[in-house]
Structures are given as structure tokens and as C-alpha cells.
Length: 252
Image (cartoon, rainbow, N blue to C red; front, side, top):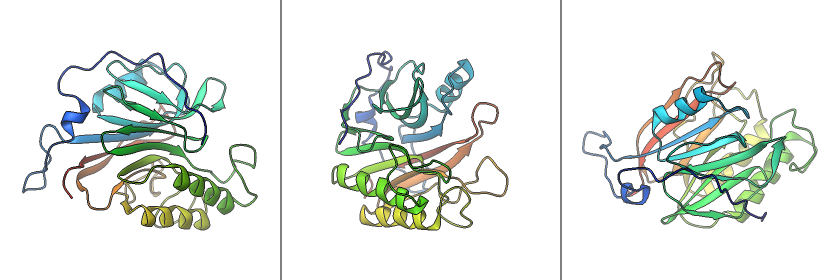
């Protein structure tokens, strides 16, 4: 496992109930989440940061953000940012997890991932290999499928057992045509999902490019109730749209 990178620029505490308090909520009998439902978001911000990026994140008011391609300039009032140690490019981290309350950052389970422990669950943001990523660090292997399998295996070995929320830019559609990753890479991902008993509510949501399905995902425990999963558009800010999953982790 790789060493954690502490972040000294966490935002001030948010007003209102803590994320921990918001974990103890239920979706009502109609399937609609209450006001305090836990909202998780993922977005590849493409290493950019501007007032428009900040406004986009603030507008969705997520309890947890699983971000990828994160600028070192990113600061979001009311959130604490836990970044991966490794640089993807100059002043750009592979991944970060943002929470409203200070939490325990875990050692990076892979150089392109960041992870935190909150209550009884692990939250992990990851980038997985894309077709043209090459074989330089942090990727291991020659074929794309081999690089994805190696990254997934490293994550599986490093992430703690127990409840897991895993998201980020996986560079794979999970159903239909595979246009960014490989079918072998998809198989490695789905095998990990099965071993960890995770499901992916974002798998059938659209990509920013018409006619394609998302390669950015959020996976939650198979038995957790999901109130909604949706995309938000981010054209002009990133070449990826963002994705939201509203879930009640206490419903098993």
C-alpha cells in the first residue's frame, strides 16, 4: 500500500448534521429518500479548477464526493479533501475523496486511488486504465486487460473487508459496447464487484457523448437501498459528466 498524503487545506466544518449522523436515515415506503438521505457523487474534473467547477460541486450538495483528475488548486468550502499521494500530471492528483466532516484517510490502495474510512465503511475513488494509457507507472502489464486486472487486483487486496463504496473514472462501460476500455478489463471489474457484493446503479446512465454509456461509476453494497441514480451535465467544464447516487446505507 502507498503512503497517504495529508491535506492541510480542508474546508471549514459544514453547518447542520454531520455525515455520520446522516447515515442513520431510511428511504420511505414509496422509495423516496428523506431530506437526510446520503448523497454520493463522482466526477472527473479533468485537472481543472475554476469558480464554475466549484459552483457545480456546491450545487449538488453531496455528502461524499469521489473525484478523479483533481487539481491541487481544488478547495471546496465545507469539505475536507483527501487526495491520492501520486501525481497524474503536474499539480494534478489521480483521485480524491471529499467529505463534510474530518475522517480517517487510508493508505492509497493503488497509486491512482484515494480512500477514507467513515463510520463502518470504506469510500474509495479510483481511475482505472484506459486504452491509450501506456505501460508507465502506475500501470502494470502490456495488454489493456492485463493492466486493468492488475490494478483491480491491487485494489481488492488493499481495500479493507466490510462495507465499501467504490467510484470514479473506471474507463469502462459495464454493459453494451466497450469503447474506452476492454472486455477483459470489464470482466476483471465485474469479478471484483461480485466478490465484494457490490452493484453499480450508474451502469445504464448515459455518457457525455450521445449514444454511449457512462465510464464513470459509483458502486454500493448489493443490499443497500438506492433512491436514485442520475447524471449531471458538465459540458464545457470537463470531458466527463458527473454522476450521483442517493442511498441509505442503513437499509439492509
